[in-house]
Image (tube, rainbow, N blue to C red; front, side, top):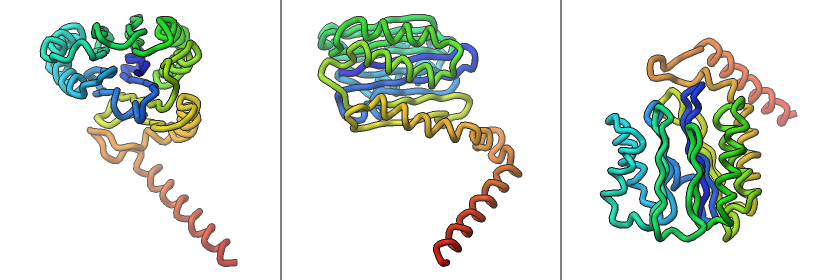
Length: 241
């Protein structure tokens, strides 16, 4: 009931998942990512523990293929599951259960997997993979969004549209980009709009706390705080006039 892309950027090491579905809040249910470890999409009649345990296996040093084997052999509901894994090296592995509602399957390329179920057809995942591959000069979040748009253009979820999300990790334990549209008639277009707003804040990300330095660019952060306070005082004075 969902189409997704799971990918790693070989240039930056970013890992991420983008997803869309005719189900509420796919962005909350499908992605599982950990910086320097891997990215997983768990969907169809999804089992969250495939993402949770999958990341644990990857962190222990298992490859994407071996982690997937461990996950599937331990889940008796495997015939209803769909899962894709990209590990820290860009190795990929995917599984589509025999009882996932058609069309269901995946397309794999260098460092990425596009997968879906209840789709208009195989062209959905093929179009996603092509869009990801031709956008190689872009940053990973942009490439993921372009892949989602291509999948929707090719027919997407054959039941319709409702939600979309993108989750990307980079160097820190918290996400680099975590955006969701939980219920909207045009979720991918709305996700694109929200992403463009997010892009305006990207230049400020170097000021965000890091594991090895909670206060990077501290002087710039203090200046920004002073500017914000001054603008608020000016707005208050304007209202009082």
